[in-house]
Length: 231
Image 1: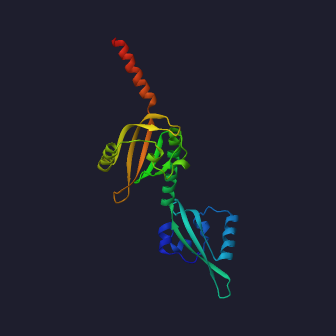
Image 2: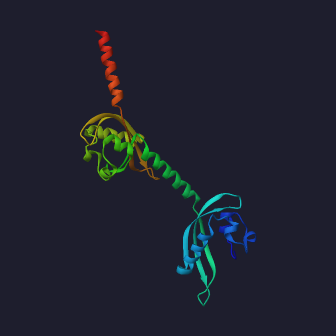
């Protein structure tokens, strides 16, 4: 290391005096093999630069993810005399991405049907629970509307009531009759939550649907049983 600016000092915690004339991979605990270093060196020799992500440690021992860009410095004869490295701490973005991926995996595998739609009612996402509930694959429904597919039939009055509740409270819930791909129907509870942007504007909706056929059957059997007792 021959140069170490204030940005590097803030990111890694080391002063310039602590790192000068030392190997950056040793100082920063870069997780990389000798083969990895050789590949990067060869790439820079061939193209003049390398971009990638690496895992390093700060002076305080904190593990961080870094987006790194390395450019070759050459003399008048074209020989490499050094390297200029630009580092960006991407740890926060990396952690957020991991959380998003984790949540996406949970949603995808959830037994409950979870569907998202845009403001035009076009389906944006469709998990395994929705596939099992309705019989349609994700590929069959994306970009289509629930009405177009015949999944749900609401009157204009019901639609207006739901939209009013949605814009006032950000969510709505009701019992409905849903339809499967094979034409059969089943009672279900659906709850709809509005997804808003940073300005508070509704951009999409997430719908949770659950088949309540068993509960309805039990309810009907209970009514019949009570009616028999009253005779």
